[in-house]
Image (cartoon, rainbow, N blue to C red; front, side):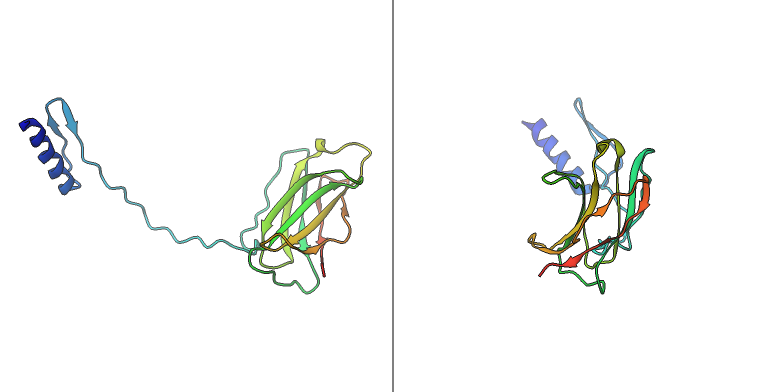
Length: 167
């Protein structure tokens, strides 16, 4: 019983001392006080909702399509809070699912994008197009490209996608 109470007092004193540098041995147990971790202060990150200030072009692997450009609308309107831009690469054959989808938050239109994908995902002889949709926080479509922009034949290309307001 005295060993248990001695151990308790020792542990309590180590806890109260906090940053004691020495180890203490009680019987066959070595007690090492934990050093509090210190972090250097870092500036608070403020996420960009426009995507423009943090947009950096990535370099895709060789042989991949690398489409860059802007999603634009007349007058570069501001978007409601929580809006998202969704770019899809579609097979233009009716009823085909989209092959690639990129989505990101934005507070306005006329924003840059990058989409890259492996060219082997495309079927020879098929036609493909790029379409943009803008949704609000609840998923309601606010803007949409009236027609898909045809996929260029070159692997690296700038493709601007214009969207129009959905009434």
